Figure 1 (spheres, rainbow, N blue to C red):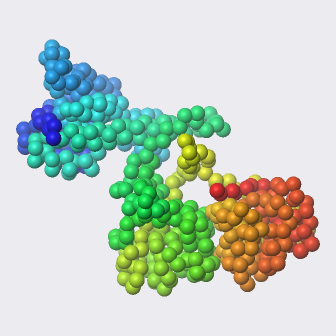
Figure 2 (cartoon, rainbow, N blue to C red):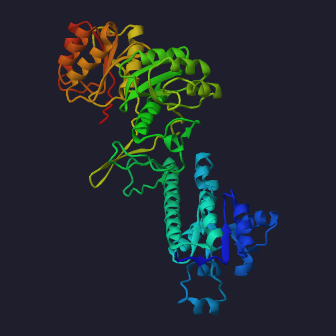
Figure 3 (cartoon, rainbow, N blue to C red):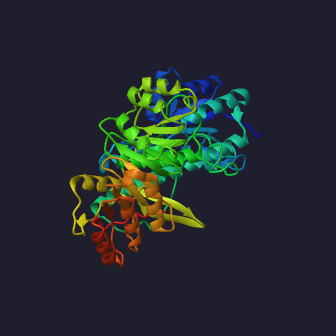
Length: 518
């Protein structure tokens, strides 16, 4: 097993979770504990013997703590290859370490808290990453614990063997390198954002370093059983990378997470209280209401057939009244909301049929939308998030929309950006009636949305994510009973489209902003 006995450990941690129990277990087996100031104080308070780093280096901490562990007596003890480096260690009076317990200054938390730049800079750890990298590099004989979540499994092996195997040391080294990579990426991203506030740039970065840590265990599979799948979270964790699951329910799947992402995004755009119903990453219903229960009923009515086996997004807390209304619905895979009241969870779990299996997820969109990444063969496509508002709201037809049509147009325009292109939605002032998405032909998308809307299309509004290339889409909308249309405009045939809308007595608004979603 290539066990290296642990005789000496270096401990320097910002997150002191589980530290005392770990150090006590080490001391019980006679391991010498060496530590930096703050960590040493905690260990002494727990009644443990500990040597401070400054005693080992025979040099005090300087620069207000900026320089503590950057010394040959520390890094020589981490990096020494034995037995070949033993003469150098003896000549310089350096003792080797077999275990390093280091986690880093809470830089990501400082970013999330919006700390000013001068304070943020002081949360950039220098000595910690150096010790992480040195011990990870020397995995042949040094074990590295870079996260408190590693302590339990380490202690189980340590208590059995007095050290850990080469396989364990390799695994811990990889975790350490992943941590320093993520840490450096979060620093680069945060500082770039802060510096851009002083000198904005329209360019995307010339070099993009993407670092994320797997959130939880691997998923059962990817989109299909023959594909592997996992969720990785950026730092600082936010959105689905920081989701909280309420007790019970089946494990989340890859497809659940895709649908949850779509539901979270659309529900965040809806007026409150709002509810959306998502199937295969696209909405089949969305609504706002005086209450969340009213919004649910209207959203579910958008396409009750497609709502079976759906994922719901709710932009307010799920209370008992909403939970009771949900229990009256057909099969639901998952629900995402900012929070669930305990009595609502109990109500949902008691629902016969799907109550025990439904996934209840608490999550909110990140404060900053960030970049959108998409893999292609051999690379990544990168773009800004589509958060653009309408560049203008220009009535281009002779007839202007009446107030109820105006309200319906704006609701439809909110929803259409969340539908795959070619995207068409038909809506009233507070609810989706029909969705046609993912079609190669825009006029076919109109037909699907109209068929889904049925009689509700009469007097309703229609939104198109991009311009109508021909007047046939407008004609199909009018035939279904639509009375107002919103679209970006920009076609070479805009004049023909407007002329046809006028002939059909439709109101039409141009926004000047396209919302393709491929």
